[in-house]
Length: 529
Image (cartoon, rainbow, N blue to C red; front, side, top):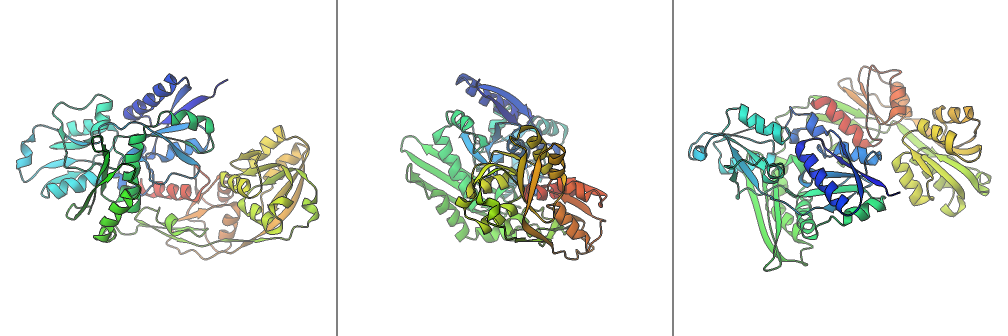
């Protein structure tokens, strides 16, 4: 029986229109499909400008989570909303033929206000705001959030002169007003007007299906625009426009890009034409042109220094520079490793003979095994693990994984029903929860626990003005408690960590994905709403 492709989408009218378009295209190719609507952070939090949320992929993150949790098979996005770097395990499966990429002004009354010094225009886009103020510096630009219908209604209800929209969004759902003005001078957002389909990298069936939807010319153009954006390190926090299109007569790619200050007073533009097929370095060359003329400094100088730090958090795991940058602007973070790991010596006799069933619950277990043995010495027939990243590491370094679950409890429940044989070898730490072994023992499965690594507490005293603490394992909670109080919010990476935190903390929140980035998103959502 052919697999039914579950199509994930936001539940706005425009998003559903786009998902239905993908559904029709797949159905015409003979695939069975099902629409699965999912709410996004950007739809839920409507009292903040998009750029102020401090979240990468504000309109895509919840769909990413559903995809990685195998709740859907593909996700359909307005491509301009998709971060230039996709989450690990997710790939661009198709880009549909681009629609109208222009911005348009929907008028409240007439165009007469253009001749006046004062006027009020609404938009939730930092790029549109900056470009409007660059052209009309005496005008006032107000925030406008929500889906297309919500924004149109807000325009109707408020005393504004007009509001700026993406033409494609209004045209797709048949709601472009007859008197809307095309803003040909406004350089659109990278990939505006394009629909993107993403899938799991490992799902060959879905990738083969989506490949047939891909429009090659659109893919080339939006890839150039998104690379330009990525090289300027923009995203939703800098006013950046980019447009590439193919001149069919000359077979050349025309590109124009712009970077502005948030107030629109400063602007750096670039334009270049390159033969199709020789466009490999087009985005890089144009980004370098902007950077060489002060682009990076413009972005740095434009950081909102007026907004004081109102919240401080502490991570019990050292964060990389890129991870620390994911916090909202008014959240200051510190980090340190509250847990240190040292591999134990594992006796050669443990792996001398083939082991039927093996459990590994963390990357520390993988690294400890590899510190003791080569890949060829590890003759494991069936490997079971906890976590997507642990699974990936095992497959890269040791061998195929039979089954993975999000936490130890779910893995134990799976093994109790599905595992062949009644013996399992568990490569674990000296500090561990007894959940897995307890459940397996209750189901008459003998667990041979091998202490592959030692977990050592390494706590620090967290400053009193810290409002939240990020935890990544039950052990990090235990380590923290040795020197600190519990009058803070505990942000936890998963259910097991949260279970331990709830024994001590009054306020505990749990990330939807077992990743550092998901915990940081949890912090942002807690403090910016």
